[in-house]
Amino acid sequence: MSTTSELGAHGEAIAVAFLTDHGLRVLDRNWRCREGELDIVARDSGALVFCEVKTRRGTGFGHPVEAVTPAKQRRLRTVAQRWLADHDEHAPELRFDVVGVLVRPSRPALVTHLRAAFL
Image 1 (spheres, rainbow, N blue to C red):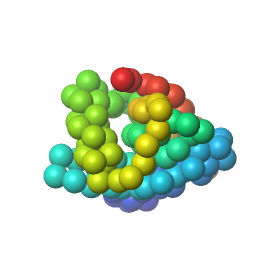
Image 2 (cartoon, rainbow, N blue to C red):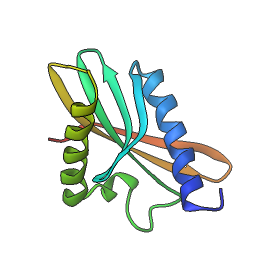
Image 3 (cartoon, helix red, strand yellow):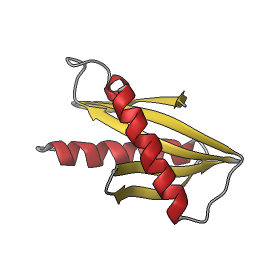
């Protein structure tokens, strides 16, 4: 993985495998609109989950989940509203999760899943 986009795609693939292994059903990936992008939209029982994935090679700039700042959270809420307006999906609960993927050379990636990371 030589580029940032390759690292991000690798991290998202790891996140999707992790989430599906834990019972979530992926509905959409990399959905874009003019306001931004949703990495993963999934269903977890009755909840509709908007999941942001952050991937890093190390923690020199902090843990990957720390990259989801309040400004990023606001943008994700806006993009989630756009996704809901474009899709016929209903759920009694909406949830914003964050998955941090720490890619380590010659070892399995470390995955941190923060359920309901923000409102």
